[in-house]
Image (cartoon, rainbow, N blue to C red):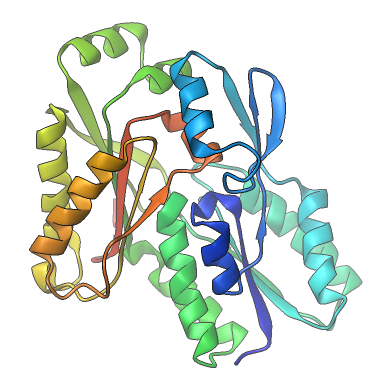
Amino acid sequence: MSQFILSCCSTVDLSGEHLARRNVPFLSFHYSVDGKAYTDDLGKTLSYDEFYTAISRGAVTETSQVNISEYLDFFSGYLSRGLDVLHVCLSSGLSGSFNSATNAARIAAERFPDRKLLIVDSLGASSGSGLFVDKLADLRDAGRSIDEVYAFAEAEKLRLHHWFFSTDLTSYFRGGRISRASCIFGGLLNICPLLNMDHEGRLIPRAKLRGKKKAISEIVERMKTHAEGGTAYSGKCYICHSACIEDARTVADMIEAAFPSLDGPVLINNIGTTIGSHTGPGTVAVFFWGDTRSA
């Protein structure tokens, strides 16, 4: 097994048990609920049910990224023990965490000139970054060097697809991403926006669908269009959701029926408190390997 540390941030939206099993340490983002500060510790301190119930009742949430000092302390803990580090960041199209990690890496390089610290901008988020990190962990466990794993990450990260829809637009309005009128009329018309992540790691609206049933069907169709090998896709598929497990299970069942060669059953995760502060409840996201995102 290669002797380097593969790490990430809490925004990969995998369980703590999953990351521990894969031997992937993580740094926590931060968030607040009605002014009370929390660490994004993957639902340990404040459960996901409690978090999304609070949002549904009108709680105000805010988030903050890992800062340079936190990154530096985290990296230094491993570098000082003679271990190299490959760290995967939340998309630079959504957060400044990649810049913070990169700046911390410059400082660390001066302190530990004989060690290697590589930072990857995943251009992804949530369990999409989680699926990406899992693949890198597979390569690490197969004995690939840190340079080989880094090269794969940079060459292949745009093949990781992120598609999601939302049935509740309230948090999009509160966050300033849509107007009050759009929120009201969207709710009245039962509009479910379908979005994905583009080649610069930004969230882009792709369609406005009438009704959840249509949104569920369309997200499966998008996977048929973009998955590597189409319906013969033999890779993994992850889904995450924010307080709508029934919808996530429906999507998973449809994907498992449409893609009989999947590598195992669809893994369903929770959208964590950092990403969920911006989506609110009612979001389902699907992640898979496919063609290269070009726009």
